[in-house]
Amino acid sequence: MPSVNIIPRPTLVASASNVLHLDADTTIGAPEAEHPAAVLLAAYLRGPTGWTVPVQVGAGSIQLLRDGSRAQDFGAEGYQLDATPDGVCIVAGEDAGLFWGVQSLRQLLPAAIEARTTVTGVDWTIPTVHIEDRPRFSWRGGHLDVSRHFFDIDFVKGFIDLLALHKQNVFHWHLTDDHGWRLQIERYPELTHESASYTQAEARSVVAYAAARGITVVPEIELPGHALAVLAAYPEFACAEGPFHAATEWGVFDDVFCVGNDATLAFLRHVFDEVLEIFPSRFIHVGGDECPKTRWQQCPKCQARIQQEGLANEDALQSWTIRQFDKYLADRGRRLVGWDEILEGGLAPGATVMSWRGVEGGLEAARAGHDVVMTPQTHVYLDRKHYEGDDEPGRLSVSSLENCYGFDPTIADMTITEAQHVLGVQANVWSEGFDTPAGAEVMIWPRMSAVAEIGWTAQADRNFADFTGRFRHLAQRLDVMGVAYYRDRAVWG
Ligand code: TNX
Image (cartoon, rainbow, N blue to C red; front, side, top):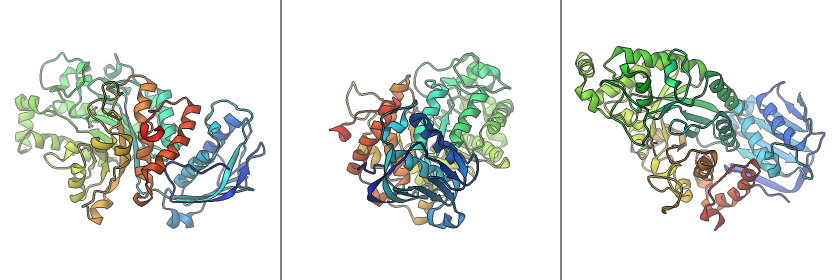
């Protein structure tokens, strides 16, 4: 009897001691032709089984039902899944819930379902089960830094599909930093002249690939710091004289955007004009972190801006800059999100804060009535080592799988209103310390699985020992996919 080992752990699982055998006659019944969750499920099934798996409007042996009247039971992303010896039915109030129901069905199937080519000799059974499930948080994110080291489109898509497997719904794409600008901008070809980068067509294909899995891509364009790669190509946007060079060491650098210069702000607006065309996401990330103020203190243009705008100091100039883009985005129906340094000098009216230097920034923003995504480096920075030790992969500090799993985005002394401003949780994959797919993967897995469970599963239903048991099963799927993971002693002893 196959067991139920879904990550993130569902709200309710009642399994009966029976199985459903799927065979070559399997069909998918969907609310409409080309329904994205049905198309995705058919694609998952066809490759490894070799079956045709037609998608049809109406009845099928695997039934996807969208029933708006159930939205109050399930919320926007919840679903119910019933598997009996006769077939499968997934019901959701909205399409998002159907996507997540499909991912649960995927995890109920044998690990061979993850194969890219047809596998023979597999008994395609699933346990009979009744599942009711809905997420705790609406922002369940995975971030990838492609500036420090570049990762190609195939890797990015593979990462996104693994996020989908875990019902993560946000892919935060860290596209720019001191070390390289990774997105083609038609108006400024020099940005990507010398570095590996994605064309706009490739970026659009990533957005479509993610959307076909229920995932939103939130692009990040860093300002006003982490700008060396831009200044190397366009030194006129700096305070000091160039030339500048894209960074080749890790760290935080003094040369940042000159925000006293109107031409710099125009440049950034032109960049965002193109970014908004590619990325339909409501949230757009503008960075805002780690911006030294040393150049601004010496720069006549920045000092003139401080004077003209009646700003108190350079912190206020950073805050003024973020407010310009908060307004720019709001005028276009988008919302600004930035790292917690955007609190310094005053938070822009519409800003959402990503709290990374601990949870204090998140607390402060929530108290001020702003939305927050919790991403504290102490727990969910996946560039950290799993354990102390010189030969451990990772850098800067340690966050074990257990430590990571133990994070609760709702901070103990938050009021109910403050807690409602916590949109969710995100793990960040900074790439200073690795430059190959496998090097990234051992940092990501299983810790990203832990973060997925933080974001989805009710706090009272979370249990680390239970999670590690389920991860041993999920690891078999990663093995089939050829995805590397860290063999954590908390999982394998
Ligand atoms: C801090 S998190 C950074 C990144 C580094 C990371 C390394 C943040 C907003 N800034 O630039 O890559 O630490 O852990």
